Image (tube, rainbow, N blue to C red; front, side):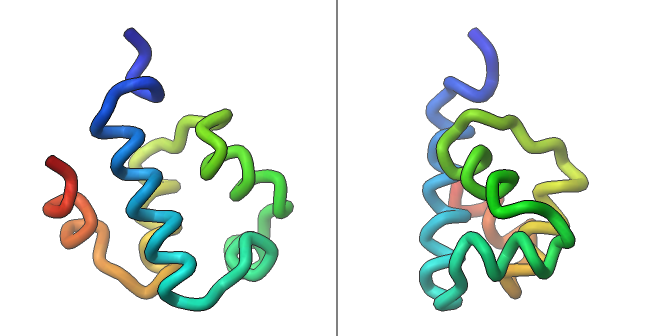
Length: 75
């Protein structure tokens, strides 16, 4: 099974979405901060695009959270 379909990956994306919303940022605003198109964030959040570890860290930094603290939330 591809990791994008595993429960932990799904949970990680759910947490990223919740953190984006908690920060009161739109997909467009996050994408602009990352110098990416809005579709990049939409594909990640829609589970259509798998992110690698460096993208994950950059996304966490953009959301103002530590990647390590997000990882600790994943069961």
